[in-house]
Amino acid sequence: MKRVVIVGGGFAGCAAAITVAKAGLEAVLIERRNALSGLGAWTGHLVTWVPRQETKLLGGGGAELVATLESLTLHAGPALGVPDHILAFDATQTDARMERLVRQWGVQVILRRRAVDVVRKGDRVEAVILNDGTRVEGDAFVDTTGKGGGMEVCEKYGQGCVVCVVQCPMWGDRVSISERAEVADVSTGREASYLGAMLLAMESLSLEVQKRIIEGVGGYSYHPLPEEMVGMDVTRYWRRPEQPPTTTLYRSHIEFLHMPFAKIYRPNIPTDVLHQIPGFENAWHINPMAGGDGQAVQLDSIAPHDTTMRVTGLSNMFCGGVRAGRYRGFLEGVCAADLAGYNACREAQGLPIKSLPETTVIGLFFARINQGHMYCDWPPGLAASAECDIYRERGLATTDMTKIRQRMEEAELVGMYGRKLVS
Ligand SMILES: Cc1cc2nc3c(=O)[nH]c(=O)nc-3n(C[C@H](O)[C@H](O)[C@H](O)COP(=O)(O)OP(=O)(O)OC[C@H]3O[C@@H](n4cnc5c(N)ncnc54)[C@H](O)[C@@H]3O)c2cc1C
Image 1: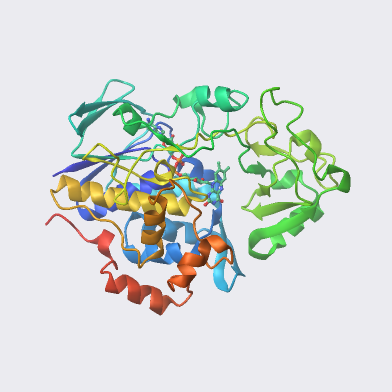
Image 2 (image 1 turned 180 degrees about the vertical axis):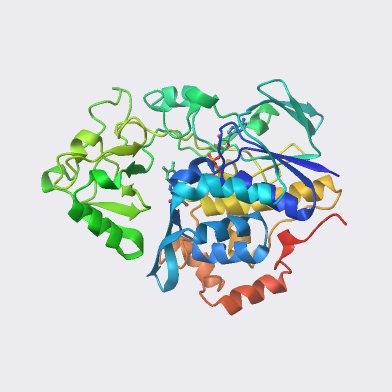
């Protein structure tokens, strides 16, 4: 049986691995940490409604992942005319659920091992080498190693390591296998540190604040910032002289998402500043572990690739997740990973690889990423912004499931990722 090796067990890697297993090939998933889900375990917010429906109809690993997250729904609120456009789920359960899910599909999971090198012959990758020296051979490979850390990156673009959720001191730095295969990343031009979403323990907030967060429509709530804080440069205490301010309290309110802990959606506020706001006097940060003054540096560089997700210059390596684009949320990375896993199988089986047609939101999204600019904004459902005009003009922005299914059927995409490629 042909084997596909997927490196990086975030949401993207999990989706790719299940897609491979569904196609009937041996799927090996390598993750440097002791749990799956990657940054996904800190998310809690599922957006982009139309691509979510297309993902489900394609029937691959992404469909399984979405179904799992939907089963963990805490709030599903209407917005922009879409019934459950804003879906908040219980992210605290994702790592355990993801591990059960991938194992249930027969994926071979290797935890606590980091791919540190690649064996390349010509344009083909033959194996990855793990940090204990093990050689894992494969017929095709998928790079879903994310873009968080490692410590050198955080030193260069941030304030050094703050022991964030990427946990480099414990498991070692992130290593991209496409770069190890001598394919240089493409910069998306956003190499700066920024503060990741912050999570607060609910019990550390006043009862009134807790109630507002829990009862917010779709899990969302807004809390006014004291007037004197609006516009405050909260990085002034700790940024180096050569670094620009990365976080100013440019809004008049804080946006929260209930997860079941409290996620500050934006803006991010250091602990001591937060403590000055009524109701937040005892607020306790869960993430980043440095307690609010830290950063979560994600180096915005991606593996060069085409609309099939094949890494440029390598015939049998594909990329997914945030390695495949500067994406805002995880769903688009999961869509890329599904396609990467599917095409890795086709390549391994000697079949021609595929792109998704532009008659789908996902296909058009991937095509636009590769037309001159390496990233673009995902159409957030039916959002009114101009960046989504092209989706509206082509009739792709719709909540009509019959129409979505029809266009997917016409393109012969329904269930495509769920069909075996091996008899
Ligand atoms: C705090 C926070 C909150 C967020 N909230 C949301 C949200 O609500 N909604 C949303 O849509 N998006 C959200 N995002 C963004 C989203 O989490 C990410 O875009 C997405 O999860 C990235 O998935 P990924 O699988 O591509 O990468 P990652 O999750 O980074 O996964 C990469 C995996 O690869 C592993 N790895 C790396 N190198 C190696 C190696 N050499 N060998 C073995 N393993 C390796 C890593 O340990 C990691 O598990 C949030 C991000 C953060 C940080």
